[in-house]
Image (cartoon, rainbow, N blue to C red; front, side):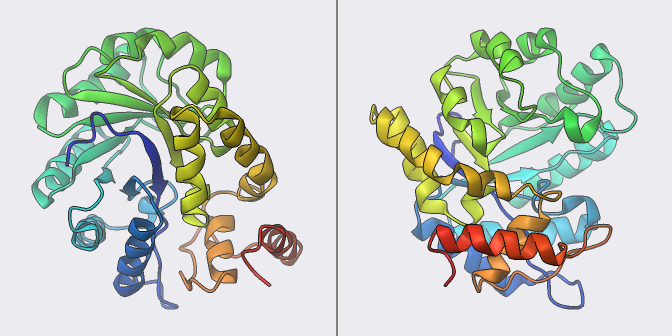
Length: 296
């Protein structure tokens, strides 16, 4: 499926695990089916929220295959294939393309970082090699490096780079790259709490953590805004803002997986170094879910 003109809610999907830490493929398929039935517009697997940094390459491939099978062509599937090694990212991207991914999410080279030219080459190496569209991922709070405005300007002109997931939380930066938006280059919010502001400057939607627990509401909020029902979209965002922020009271994806477990979705534990939330935070999160009508 073509993701170049995609709009709406892309869920940054969690990866469910069994108690022993192995991937729960049956539950993973169930989650995809739930999202398809609740208007999620595309599924991103193997991203930050999917705990891909704790998974082997073999697990990456198996998870991607499971998600593609479950989606069954009904919604696009985007694979997170980023690495701080450009060669590793290239190899992972080529495998994901071969397995049938509709697009790729490519992160900046965390830890070793690179200078501006190195970061540009990091993305170009993959975009030149694959035939499926690539989305840049700017999340300096996690990676320690950002995609400069100048690099966004340059990379947005690459025929195989179709957008950017902007997760810095910096609206000034988002404004400075908004002129790059075109029919060939989309801006995606990477922060649920500022989806509406990013839509207001031309964004196409959100790559969402919140959508893991309220997929229909997330889709409806984005489409309400894009289709002109802006007061309704803003009302939805304000109504759910505290819950959106609550999903980051500890490092993602700890709260969202905890929320899904509290809702009875049974997505299992985490892989170290991630571990269970504090008891106080678990109770606080349950209170937010209760207010949203997601738990009794």
